[in-house]
Amino acid sequence: MRAPALIQDDIVVLGLIAATLGLIFFGASRTSGPWQKFFSFVPPLLLCYFLPGIYNSIGLIDGSQSQLYNPVASRVLLPAALVLLTMTVDLRAIAKLGPKLLLIYVATSASIMLGGVLAFLIMRVVSPDTMGGDTWAGMAALAGSWIGGGANMLAMKEVFQVDATTFGQFTVVDAGVAYVWMALLLFWAQRAASIDLKRGADTSALDALREKVAAYQAAHARIPALSDWMILMGIAFGAVGLSHAVAKVLAAWLAVHTTWATPMGLHQPFPWMVAFCTVIGLGLSMTRARALEGAGASTLGTVLLYFLIASIGMQMDIAALFDKPLLFVLGALWLAIHALLLWLVARALRVPFFYFAIGSQSHIGGPASAPVVATAFHPALAPVGALLGTLGYATGTVLAYALGLMLKALAT
Image (cartoon, rainbow, N blue to C red; front, side):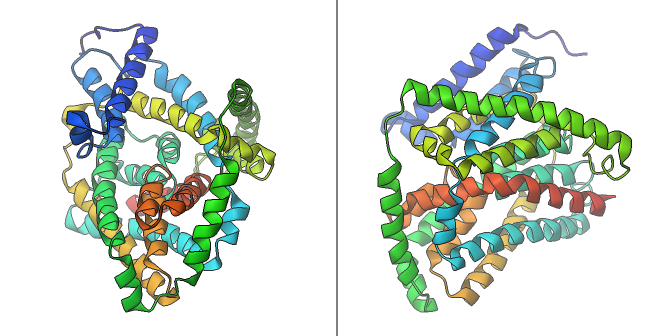
């Protein structure tokens, strides 16, 4: 039996987590010295998972007894982050970027889903023990991250009831595999011109894209005011309250009057609450409310997201994270299949290498790192990575849920 944690007051735990996140990002923001060298090798995201996990593992806190994750983080902060992140999606602007870029985006989502299925089947033959238990559910959570982002990954954790240790293992796979892939894309970005020349890619649309994105960026930048932040808080948590109210009624009705909802997990309010928040965010993105991105809507959403990530880390048992080292092989195989399929599509469409790189990174890395890869091609293209990355927040939950159902069927 586990001994009582040293810190049991959730208010003190919240302060510890907030201070930890502040210290991590203070170090990550340094541009010189030992901090800069350290964070050039260790991504901040990984520390946001691991440090709270260490606190839990050494008995400083007890994540399983804390209420910070459930109900506070998973039922309040998660849907609020989804609203803020999806309301920044500019669907009209993305549509105007060209049909081939959108085709690449769709092909990326499809290749990740197909890659997940193929990797599961291959690894089940290679190592049945690795693929046992709720590994399929961990893959569904990872798909949420690789199609959408951290909020979608956390949503899938709740929808498929992923064990905290399994989830922690897949966060390590996510960070390890994804950052290696990002490093490769940055390396190839420096050789994009020669790659495009050898392949005979049509780069005319990319030249026009640079001008369009630069104009969009200049038109929306502004300094946020207090009223902007209060409006954002009102929108986010107002949507959360409305979504909770409607989701509870709908889930209760489905549980009583249908037979198909229960096997799919739709008799529970949570997936409906996530869906409603996503729909509300997308609806707002088509109104003038989307202009609040200039006041930091996605930044506030990301702040909430990192508190979610830390609250997940609080439940991890660090010693058990590496019980399944072949999960890294699973992740690498999955990503390799995705890359091969997407490359074949990119060659068939004769698109610039930028389309391949940003399509992949907008999924695998999300809006946090996609602009970094885009900037390696041209600084004016950074918002394109952010636009495609935030679009994943809108599609990631639905597609990862569909993949999760397929993997669950294969596992049973």
